Image (cartoon, rainbow, N blue to C red; front, side, top):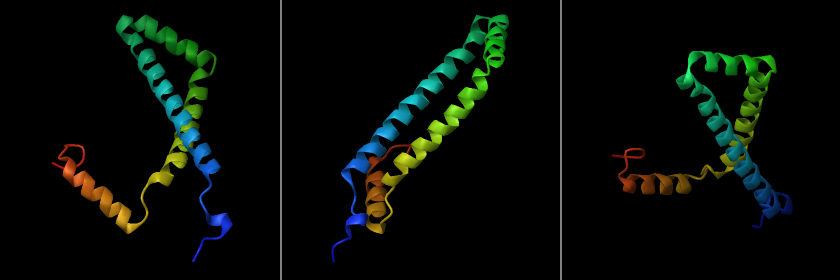
Length: 108
């Protein structure tokens, strides 16, 4: 039995979801790097770190960045969650491959 037209996967939708995942992932990486560099200003000295914090708070950059980070994270999770295997056979295949890796992040 063939699926109705509305239930068939669309290459255009797949493309848009892949692009959304790619762009949101890149934006999340940029936010994490910026956060790392801004926190690293404490190495230069406490006054510099406090000055950076004051600047970010004065112009509400902190609040904006938190909101954007949450938005990008949500978009990223939604756009890439479709890759999670839902069928039993697909999950079993993933577990079988993970078991053969012999890596500390999968199985030891």
